[in-house]
Image 1 (cartoon, rainbow, N blue to C red):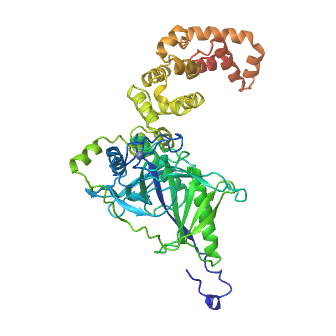
Image 2 (spheres, rainbow, N blue to C red; image 1 turned 90 degrees about the horizontal axis):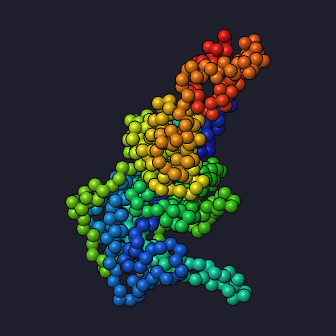
Image 3 (tube, protein in one colour; image 1 turned 30 degrees about the vertical axis):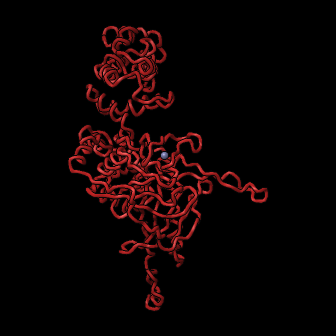
Length: 506
Ligand SMILES: [Zn+2]
């Protein structure tokens, strides 16, 4: 909004200056996800990460003349499943196009992608934000389109010493032809937190489906951010800036927050925002200009003549839809609304599908959901991290955990004893009840036996007893501790409390 230059003439001095313009950010993400197929999108070369340079290539992915690409059927299946999980409309007729540009990592001088008829459009995903008070809010982010394409190779800048004549780059075509699906969100996000949560939810969904491993360090999931800032309430978008080079969710969040601040300050100073591509610099925690971008490049797209159009029947789409697993958002809703977990706990448990399934199996075996959630998110997760184990490989199975929690609930053992038994159960598995019996650890809940112990203690600690009776209430804990010491932690805590109270007060 242009400030009205003459407004001060009519502004009486006693009234404050007009309110400062409030700005809001408009953010959209373009995400490239590598589909986890064993072979490339148009040839039979393997897609293994980290193989020796150019060892996974053939005439097709090297773009030799006269070769013909053939679409990998699993790529189509994975792309459609991802699109269905994102609530997209699947196109019954779709096609590939050539996107033409020159770059040394692109052997054909064009990339096979999808242009005007992508495989899917018009979907959405739901993000859930939990604030510091534990309050959660849900928001739908639209998905504009999802399409399939091939990846390019990788340039390795081997030398940069121009004077010594070692200024050259090497190219590795192992990645050329690796299948990607590009997912474009609507401009629906307003903050770094929302964008980071969108990217995380997208990764979760793809991992639940098993169509992408979501490894950002290896480049399996790459996010580009489009961001502009405008006065709140303005119907038009500001000039957008693209940010690249973020390889973690926190980097996405910080880069966006930095950029919102930078653009807002520029607008407030009356500057014009340049349309450009900026890079996130992790070291200095800022974005820097990479190149200006006036208008969009002309890639001279045209339909790929070597690949037939893609025709999908409703029966095929339905079949893939039926194979979809329950997705993270559905699980979160169920955990919160049916099982009574907090939004925070539901989020932690559903982050990875195997942990969610372990939790559900524990509850199905009779465990209390809240208890199961605490144990899985707490001690069990810590154990898995310390031992670099997957929950699927954990010797303590869900039925065993349910049995252990049942023993606490029934008063057979205390929570403290259960924690002591846990390392052995986690590493060996087996029946918690059998272990408790073998070690003679069942809880002491015979009032007569506990009373006898308390009597002994009162005789052994007359000074403490006298002080307690004189009003030093803190000493109650001392007696509880003595009972626990005497019984090896097996005394029923509630019964101990009741009996001690009665006895100490005389
Ligand atoms: Zn190949």
